[in-house]
Amino acid sequence: MSIDEANPQGGQCSFVRPTDAELKARLTPIQFKVTRENGTEPPFDNPHHDEKRAGVYVDIVSGEPLFSSEDKYDSGTGWPSFVRPISPDAVVEKEERSMFGVRTEIRSAIADSHLGHAFEDGPPPTGRRYCINSAALRFIPKAP
Image 1 (spheres, rainbow, N blue to C red):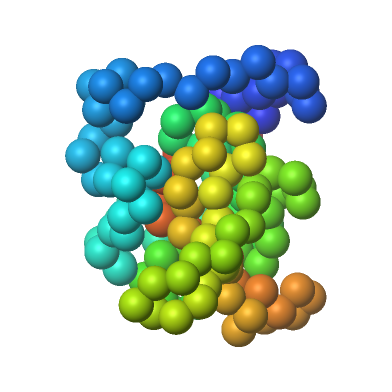
Image 2: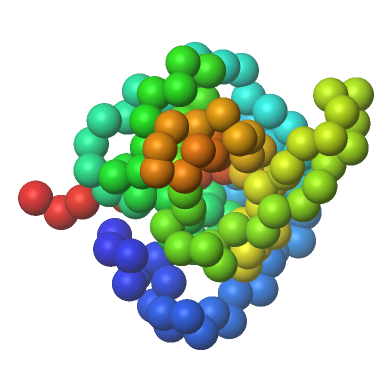
């Protein structure tokens, strides 16, 4: 699947998020927990942590392109980490207050899926680390 197939309207998207019942039927339990209940998958035990191929990571719910493999790096945290989203408007940042203090939650812009969190301890050029749950993503490899 290409980026255009993932979002055939380009910037114009008519996506309507499925109901929770529909998503529970379509997603795995961990995918639902992460995307709809703001859960976190276990570190190092997830499908995209060690993914090394070129491609694009899309929202598991909507297919909207979120991150490029070109911006992925090994942060040592056990989750896929990126220095930036595929475009500035691909994700929404929200302040989250919890037992961990104040963090920056990252959600997909179109489907409003919980993806993970952003931290200010990443490498150049952005200095940011987008720490993202594999369960919220589907990987589309670049065509050979």
